[in-house]
Every structure is written in structure tokens, then in C-alpha cells.
Image (cartoon, rainbow, N blue to C red; front, side, top):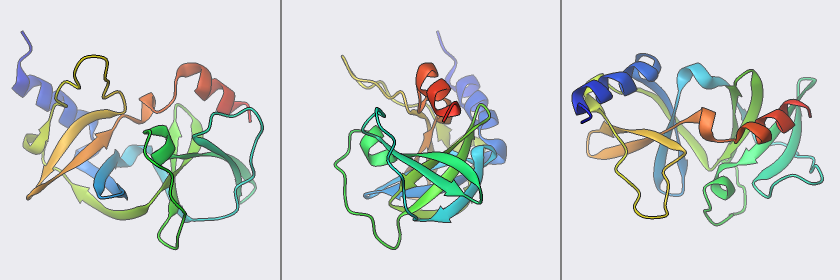
Length: 163
């Protein structure tokens, strides 16, 4: 039997000091542990790369460094929408590979106390919550805390590292 308090404590330790960069996809607030964040940059031209999964929009040249970019909406199976002046790239580091995440808008850096981090409820038969590692409770709302390591399968990450 899993001890929920112990599980919450382990999840809180995974979130660096409880500090998250929060962003929106539609009306849903997501968070990424600050230790994964490299920088946030405004929208810029993306060069398409052949034979990439549909959620991989292509690559950008960020100060001479080639960064693959993924549209989070498409990765999560959410309908694509036109980019606007609030759309931006959150550049993260996954196992030494930089990746740009295209998000609707960035919100803020927030602290989530360890006691306010909960486990993700089961998704149900045939479903998965593979991208969300925990849920942060914030006032009257919630933040879905992403597991950056699970945004890509191992073979996808190797392919990106070789771009």
C-alpha cells in the first residue's frame, strides 16, 4: 500500500523548492520545474524538418544554436490554433538536449509548498497521464506539473539530439 504523505513529499522534492514556471494551453495551467528551464523566447520563424512527428514543428536558430521545437498542444492531442503575440517558446533541457516548447502564453514563476502537491488521479482504462507527474494546488485552482523527461520517448530524444 502506498503512503500518500510519503508520495507527496517525494513529488515535492522533485519540484525544485516548489518553484514552477507556469504557462497556459487554452484555459489549463501547466507548470514546469524551474531546473528544466533554460530561457523563454518570443515566437520566431520555425524551419520544418522532414520526417518528424506532427507535434514537432521543426527547428529554430537561437543565437547560433539549433533548437528543435514541439507544439505542446499537438503533443497533448489538443486542437492546433493559430499563434499570436502571446505565443512563445519555453526552452528546456531534457537529459542534455535543448528543446523549445511552443505554448499559448507564459504566466508566472510560482512557489508551490510541498503540502500543496498531490498525486495525479488514475486516468481510467486505456488512458494515460504520462506527461503529468503531479498536481499543484493554488488558491482556488490547480497547476498540472509536467514530467519533462516523459515528453519524449527515448528514441525521439536521441533523434532530436542528433539534429
